[in-house]
Amino acid sequence: MRNFKRILKTAAVFLLLVSLFSAFFIACYLRGENFHYQDGRERDALAGELRILVVGASYSLFGIQPEVLNERVGTSAYNLSGTLLTLRGRYTLLRQELERNPKVYRVLIEVSPDTLLRDREEEGSKGDLPMLGRLTDSAARWDYFREAFSVSEWPEVYYDLVSKGIESALRLVTGSYTTENEIMVLGYYENRNPDKPIPNNYAELYAAQRLPEEIDPENVAWLEKLIELCRDHGAEPILLTTPQSKYYNCVFANLDYYQTWYEDFAKAQGVAYYNFNLAKAKLERLPDESCFYDTTHLNAEGGRIFTQMLAELLNLRHRNGNTRALFYSSYEELTHASHYFQ
Image (cartoon, rainbow, N blue to C red; front, side, top):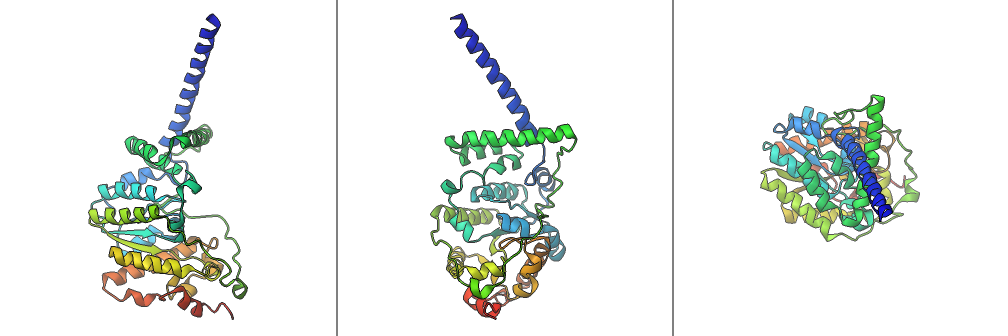
């Protein structure tokens, strides 16, 4: 009996120590801003001032620079996008910012084929994990934990929090710990990795691959909720697809399937949709050789130029100009302008 009690006491002390150390490390992670997506303090400081919000995944995170948008449109914009950010995460961040920024009049919702194809069961929790370090309100963080993660994923969540906490604590020891994000500017994250080479043997690559045509109804429901959220707060939602490389537009045979889907969806929802892959100026202004980090993401220079193009579109909308004249009607039409076979 004494040995059993001793074992229980030892186990209790061990669990207490593990809990204390875990709490310390997790606090280091959550209270600091040592990972590129931790922009909470900047958003807190700007509360009430924002007029345009951008929400999406990595395509818009790397592709839309709010500083350029502010300069060209004369507004106050913020980019809420994040790498692999789920639609639930987009909704949560957008809801928070709309509630505390009543002057927001426009929300740019980035969409792509990936947006419709994402599968939570197949993809796992990696798109939701950063949200726990990005939210600064404890109650909001707890609500997101309860809603986004199943019980079977709790060990993964614990490991992620502790491992990032240990990394944060090491930064604390070495003097490189920070409580203010030093990488993102108005939510924009500049990808500073070297650009990857993009193939240009278009004639050989043309229509060599196909994207799946399996749209997840849950993703559609989240898109509808995002649009409804915008309207509930008096903001105009606009759907947009950021530019991808000429290679990407060449190699996939069924991109018009998604173009048609988004056009029909936007019409049914009563919102505008712009696909900048079909922008007539894209081939000249955004060449693969200088404007893309990889086949699907813009680099810093490409992001600057694309944001200028986006600002031109928004200014034209403001003047009630013919925005449709800026775009080809389909990828099939784009093919004839792209000279893939020359």
